[in-house]
Image 1 (cartoon, rainbow, N blue to C red):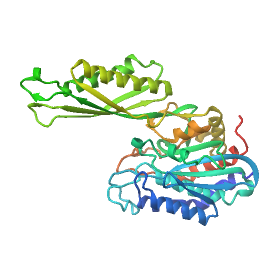
Image 2 (image 1 turned 120 degrees about the vertical axis):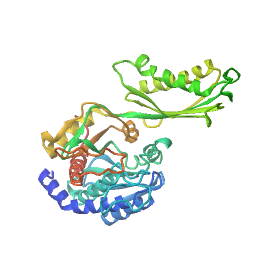
Image 3 (image 1 turned 180 degrees about the vertical axis):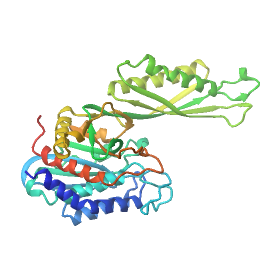
Image 4 (image 1 turned 90 degrees about the vertical axis):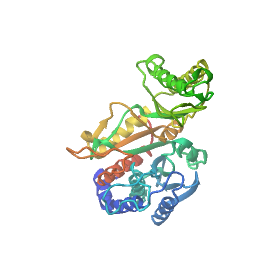
Length: 400
């Protein structure tokens, strides 16, 4: 078995190349589902490394297949590729060249790590048992359409060879540089958006008795939705219900015909997820009815809760401690409230999702989805080392 010193040496040798790829990707961000240049760069790089390439997964998705010299499991490693619609405000010489688009969530780093894994692992085939499938995924940020993971699965990315186990990773500002964290069970929240359209009867503001006020109904609905967590969800479970948009009316002295609410629900358990959905719909419809209006609810089950498999969690923990040292493994104390469509992969095969730290001592990192977002690029080498150790170890089996 190849030892950790050799893995570290090879990764450090490849790190300038990995950073160069990351900066190229950062200069050319692409929106969800439109990652054509990114996908082409991934394909070209994998082919140059002698990696078997497959395309056609949800339009721009790519899979790279590295087969080992000995029989074993197929390990899937996922790397998301899309950027966000925002104007970059950093002063880097490699800042975005695309107006209104930016890699503000680290996906350029994730894709570069995937290419780094391919570069190093393609020279380790003799040490590899089983097969590694590198999955470069589009549209992770596109929650409105349900994210790209489920469509890659639909298009067969987990087949031929069938993936037995998966590892995913996300750059994480709340962990120190050099550390990697994870936890058993729920790791990230299910994320489900909703839109409530309320129809009433318009009228003059001075004669509300002749109208059916959708703004009044919407106000009562917003208040009533807050009862779900406090009165319907088990106090030992967790959920968040937030209304972020309340839109209605065009003039101060007119009762409008319609009003619209938009919000999001975050949950960490599938049963709670469905319970909250049912209560949102019932509260909106019945409250509107009681106030003489009609509510139509568009509630979308998009990203399910991301739940780590307990066996794969233990194996990933062992790999992290082995390659980075025990002090650089962090057991994350509680799940993160953000959504992540790696959850679809975790529902399909036993999986573990990891957080890759990049916080420096005394530093308060900029959080993702911010126009000033950046991360310490040396973290990419840490992530590649962990991916490689997991690929080499999990390919030999998944039993505890």
